[in-house]
Length: 283
Image 1 (cartoon, rainbow, N blue to C red):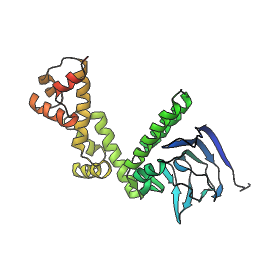
Image 2: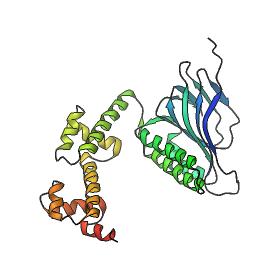
Image 3: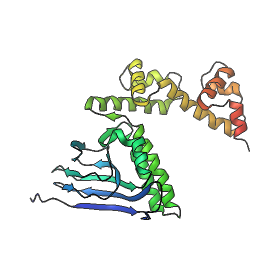
């Protein structure tokens, strides 16, 4: 079997305006691409673009600025303007990536604000959300509407913010901890109407309630109780918009002892009392 390197293969590509007079951020390319087994690239004359990429499958490594990072499923790659780099894949798999490149006067400011601490390739705690952000840009490109470029630029900024929100997962132990957190969060999302769902969520993941609270604080910066409140009040918002349900009935439905306690919790979650919320959304 030949071990000759396989060249980069672009599976899907979209290109954007090349008007150098445009201010702000300019999208340049959006690609879904493969780099086969034994692929190796030394890019010393890279075009003047910033790059964010997401690894879908396969394994490899990337090196720049004196450091080397592992590329693996779920990893996010952030690379700066005019940054020479080397990239190579393992001899056993094809590396598949989503990649967006961009430039412009404001690009550096956005990178400084959102991505500076993440230069390199990292597994982040919200990799699913980052993947969804990439998919949204691809879907908009496929539709090809008259305002495609402007919409994609807004989606790119959303991608930046999603990357900035993620917590870096640096070890297998940390990855397992995040998986436990995810199981607890999904349980709460599916069973948030049960008054004892927080304790059951911890039990479903095989951890104590105290440990689950630490995981929520670590990966989301909040508590299970706050997450439950957000879910329940989002549901209550829909009920308020759909009819004239009395506050007494809402209090019972969401596990509160009286309408005042429910109203207080609703305002804490939404910034509005139930009546103000109804008035603000009435025709």
